[in-house]
Image (cartoon, one colour):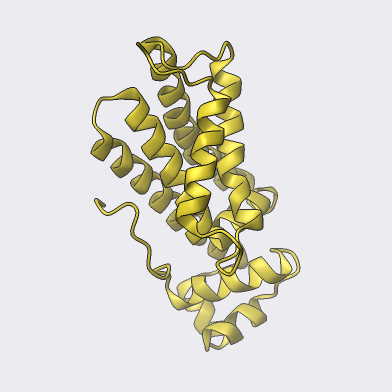
Length: 200
């Protein structure tokens, strides 16, 4: 993926699109398989033909979400090149945009980790850890280059991830700020958080 800033509708199979809608509205435990099947225009046996359980729907949705998030993050870093500030800005912008344009998927992933089977939860946490490492590495690179002055890079990395993920809980397309304005403001917050100071 090279056009990491470009977003269209999420490319989800109908059963997963229906599951996303239902999970976002009612939560995993408040959603029935019958409800998902109806939203997808399928019978319950027809839904089970594609996904054998409600848990498999949650897992399938989570895998697609995390794959896209990581692909976009890595594309942003690749485009930014070697400059530490450019890499930091690109990664934070990518995370912010993802959590605006894929806010329902991000919200379900962050709130329904508690509903995942233990075996899959470990896999999902591994994806999240990989994303967190990208943030941590960007912060550490800035510290090593002297442009970030934070004395607590690991804490800063966690706070940055929380800042970006939190956008999915409040962003609305009809809100007072557009995506570019939200990116601009939150990039400033992110730079302040790591103690950005231009080098002489």
